[in-house]
Image (cartoon, rainbow, N blue to C red; front, side, top):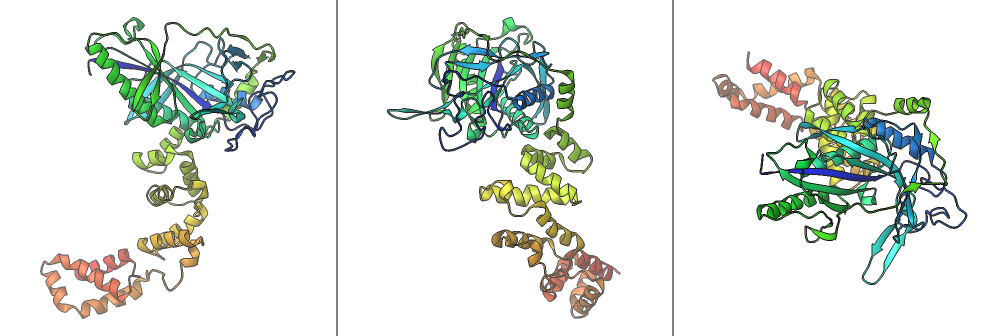
Length: 482
């Protein structure tokens, strides 16, 4: 352990993209490149408009709370967080402050980091509305209200994270949870995930469980990528370490991450919490959450990434590595699930997915949903490969040919290119080759066993590469070793 121990807490904001409408209005909830096309009078706070709570957004928030082992409140209500900024047409944000999930009882997140199981306590999880987005140019700032009113889950952790690697692993795990649970696409490229990082350093020799031993924290606002979170944390650890090493004191302040310079930059000092003058939202009545509804939500939680990973290892015999690669992205895992439903050999399907398919979509920068070879079409290749109709080399050729021409693999599997697996036919071919190569046979039997590959090559040459290599080796071994 080093001289200092980092204490890191995260505030993760994730848009709930899997609802048809926004959290308090009937405006469409979808990502659009065209600005200001998903906007309603409620989003713009026109006089006389009133909010209506999106029940599906509440359901997904409660589902998230269950997954994170939080408690669920008996009553659900919202509050106004008052502050004035161009991205808030109302002059306040509708959020939850005094009664967020988990109502004072810590939740808990278990995740893997570098092969170790880590735990982070959840301080609270709450549902609120997102603000509009601002684009700043040289002489103007443009506002896009499409994002205003989009349901947003804010997850606040305790400072249980100790490194940049742990922070990123936690965020990747949470992105996976939101995707697998059908709560959000959690796509940072669409601005659906943003993160504030709180970090302090303490003397590593002191008791971490005592808050009095913690250092003074700095908050880094609105980091928009996981790579940015990693770099910002590493930079702050170095910055704060240098201050402490030189006998200085870390100031409590708010900073921002600047990707261009690779540094955090001072924004403002932060001595006390800002007074947002919270009060209960008068236009949204408090409503009771029934136990029946909670039971229904809990029963609807789907199989999550860690559950699937365990299943792939224990039931299907995949390696820890392959299972981890497959479950990292839900679309990849869903593809594999379809392969399993088609009764493909799990290890064979996993190999094609992790080696050929992922490499292809990464190379050509396409999404898996747009990949031509669906599991059904991939199965055409694997079925013939398993039957011995085609060789592994031919299978790869057919794979790329099918993608190149957008034609089903079976189009390229013909009698002319079929692999020769008939033992009788191969036996005759091998007998002729051995009869015509008596000197090499004698040398092999005298101990020059490296000639075995020569005989295999002769068979492949005779059959123009169509002979099943496994059967060829088996027959050759039987003839040469007797």
